[in-house]
Image (cartoon, rainbow, N blue to C red):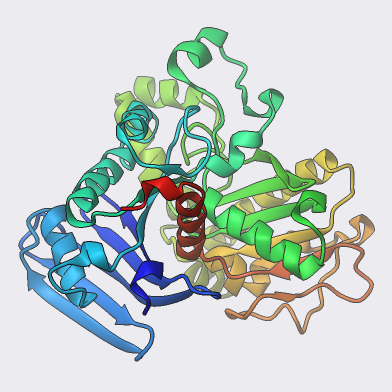
Length: 407
């Protein structure tokens, strides 16, 4: 690999580091990817994949005391020797929340780190670990570091789409507004959809479905995101694996009065014990579909609630586009693999110009393809997302446009 084209992508959690190394030549390719888990515990582990030799390494029972130790072990696995700074051209960091200050990928400096820290109250479980990962990476890799924000794709939302009808001072003083997430995924999907539709991005009108354990939708009008389902945090919007999505805020008060629950406990339930899991006790869509087929009423109900919420937003987003929709784009674990879910979402929508081809809409992960019928006026695309590649591409774009930061 040409050392000057190696981009390391890092997604740092409170006790984990997800990583991928890309060779950013004429056509970007992922060389290594892996996951460090259980950081800070005596039972840490690393899963490392060499995508060139198709070999996997699984190291268990490690004692990875902190993120610095974890990244050093990653460096060893990447076989970059004692001087990784001479081999890594740039490091791209996934950062969940950029707040209002950080609306595009940015070269990391003290001001950017301060802004990430200021946005931490909006993403307390995500931004602090990201900052920790950035600080460690700066020690180990003497090269440009770039922050890529999940919220950046949605920075084009108009005020009437991102404002909540709360006292305006909450927005002014606390930054409470809709931000949206899954932005790196949506950016990638928009680019691939533009290619498949053979239309410039700035002419594309699409509705995007990122359906996985975390699920959201976004609507793009003439290449610009104009609305999305997630809000100030990833809790709002669709029903997810363990998140409830949209719910009457008064539920917090009711549970406090009737169950004696503290507000933090209620929010924890809404994030970690609700959604599909709360409705039926399972959070894997494959298990839920099979249980519903076997006659479980609660699993069938969970499935219907999940689909109903999506169709509700689909109708709203078609209105926002005035019916001028180039395509529906399905992605992420459920969106890519479940033909049944796609079928239920699009069921009975022929009068809206949406009809699937039953053969093309079979279950299973597939390469990017069209699954609409010949008579469908609106195309329906399945596109496997690649958030790490999106981060690597954005990192290169930023570094190349700031050549003076190269070390």
